[in-house]
Image 1 (cartoon, rainbow, N blue to C red):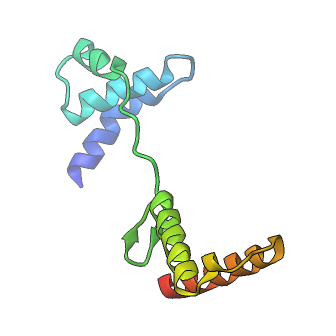
Image 2: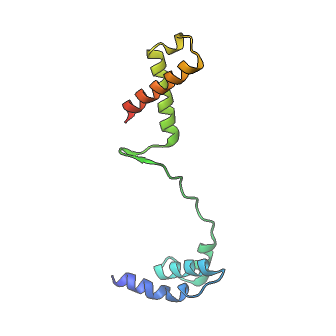
Image 3: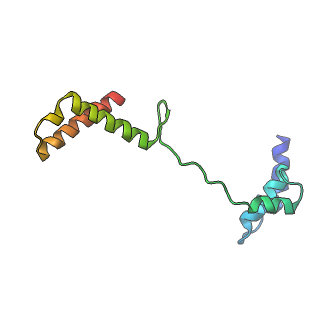
Length: 114
């Protein structure tokens, strides 16, 4: 672990003190101590570049990540299929039977997906 110890020793002066420039000092030290920059000016230029935005986090399921939008789209399609298979569209629906039909479809679709 010699490299980590050397890096930590190198970083000590850049981690001391507070102030508004603390993050910049830390970044400059990290660039210099890791060897990504050879001069302080070069390190400062790298640290001044705008940060790349991080990708949005997705919820992970057992088989890997699946976006919420994809889950909702699949669920909606499953419900439409359920309505067609069970002749729900052909029935005269009142507000109560729509709620019951949707609840049943959701329960059936979640059981198939889970």
